[in-house]
Length: 187
Image (cartoon, rainbow, N blue to C red; front, side, top):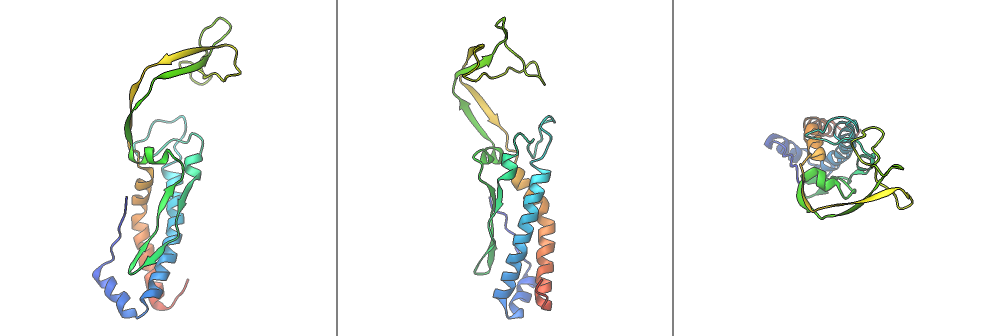
C-alpha cells in the first residue's frame, strides 16, 4: 500500500522560488527519516503491544513473542525528481497475513497431545480447557487427528493504522523542516 502526501500548490511555489529545490528535498528527506523512526516506535507501542492475555483487537495485535514487533524497519528516504519515498515494513513472514488478512483451508493432519498417567489429556496451567502439545521426547502422549477446515484471519492492519495515526504529525514536521530550510536553519 502507498500513502501519498501531496504538498499544496503554495508550498510547491515556495520550494520553486527558494532556488535550491535539491537542498529542500534533502532537508525533507532527513526529516522523513526522523519521522519514520517515530512512526516505527508508535506502531510498536500502539499497535503491536496489546497484552498477550487481553482481548483480540480490531486494529493491532497482542504480543506473543515480540518477534513481529522487533522486526519493524524503515528504508532511508530517497529523493527521486520532486518526490521523496521511503518504506516501512516487517521481515517476519506472517506480518503480511496480519496486515491484509486471509481466507484459506488448513489441511488436516495429526498432532501429539500430552496425557497424564491415566491417559487423560493434560490441560494447560493457565487454561485447563486447552490441550498441551507433546514433544517427541514425551512418552505419555496421544495422537489426535483433525480434518481440513477453513480459516479466516481478519485484516488487523497494525502498520497501516499506525502510519495513518501519525500522518498529522508527519505533515506538521515536514512543514516545519521546510520552514527551517527556507530560514537557513540546517537542523
